[in-house]
Length: 406
Ligand code: PMP
Image (cartoon, rainbow, N blue to C red; front, side, top):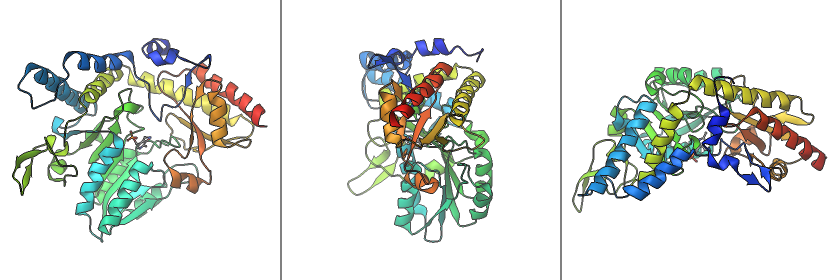
């Protein structure tokens, strides 16, 4: 933890000095959303205070300035994930909308002979969306099993891929279990049968370096709010040749090149996938978050987060009556668990009374909870600004919970 000054990082997040009922906030719900550093908050305020106006269409200086900041933000994202081109960065409202853009286009391309492959560990956003696209087109949704540890069954993954597989979608990191998937290997296998690959990066992007050129996937999607940026903004990255031809989902202003009463032609990328006035401040805030995050030493970030998870896992294993849900060897940022004494909702409530914020329930992964035979879990999830002391505070609080419930 030496190369990494966690206190200096904490200083930049105003919310972390809050108290909850007189107790210091211990924020361990980072898989739901991360907190925002002051520079991101300032970027939003500055945009609205100095150059708010609509982008691309104005004949005035404010519109020019807003457009420059907004399109500059696209460059920042493109560079961050090493996109081949800025045209491949499509703004959306977040991961969920990004998947919907791809899935609604896919539904028009699928036939009854096609298959779409997902995994048993999907968030609803990366399950229901494909499920509905398959229903509409008559294609088959194939679900790759996981092992009891929460790892993907790699033999099954290979066995289920075939020439009918049109698209394969999987999470970079599981939000419910923390499982880190071997995404480069999965992508290579899917590309070998000529399937398109979408990686749900919602939980990966803040914890793992992402280079879409190295990965070789076709789509990588993520949300700003899990990466220290604002809510309501996210990215669909896709290969330019694919996005150029992909059936558009939403239509309206900006995404057109020519319109008559009876017909319309679509704009060039990236605009053809972006209908209507975008989330301008959100894009600017997201870029500021990425600039802030990119200045950190990623190796030090990962070492720090691994130390948090390791300490949490060690204390959980030693905790009488607690069972960890998700024990894959490669995990990132998440400790999911159940306790003999109480329902996850009770655990969450009693932790909150002590200032410790976690999430409980099915984590938008209802079928996964069923597969694992739990009603839901209590989930502590970590970010760069968490400390080993906070991990200790979680377990001190859990000890009290155990007493109260027992
Ligand atoms: N996929 C995963 C793995 C997630 O963790 C989340 C957010 N919980 C989503 C998709 C959906 O992201 P959003 O709600 O930001 O659209």
